[in-house]
Image (cartoon, rainbow, N blue to C red; front, side, top):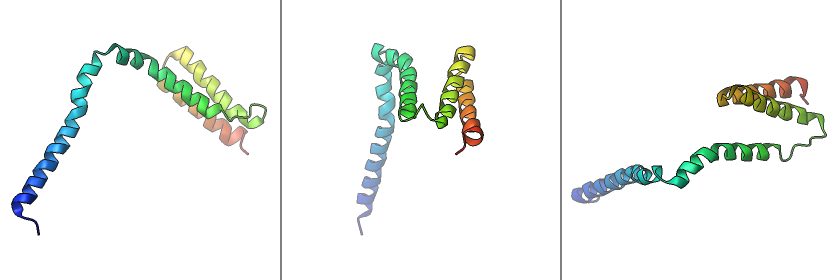
Length: 109
């Protein structure tokens, strides 16, 4: 069985390392907030991520088959709602509801 002072020192070192690791992101965040690169990426990344997700979801879609109509209609509804209302939440919910409705009823296998 380890000595009591050894156990206490181990717990204190572990606590200090944990505290330091939790504080490190906040310390690194301060210089990043003034970075022009991070500010540029914060305006461009959301659109880039959405484009990557759309390409990933639709890259295997056989557009000549009937089952492709549900995702393509949902994509059209999402884009239309976003251009009309400029509300991301409404666009995502509307596109998701369209896809679920079409895929489970009209274009069910």
